[in-house]
Length: 61
Image (cartoon, rainbow, N blue to C red; front, top):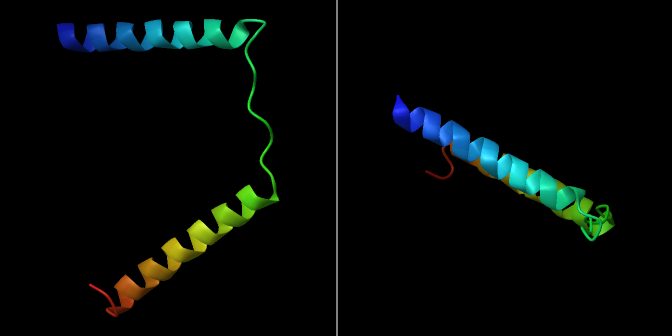
């Protein structure tokens, strides 16, 4: 039980640390995703679905 409490405390501490970093004035938020990112995401999903279908049909094992 002590391990669970220490893990929980570690999560709270890390969350607080990261929130403090993000609240600082010199923190630079990442930019919005572009068209290239969207194409890469769609291509990754399509390839994954294709491989899943091929596995389900027994083409690849």
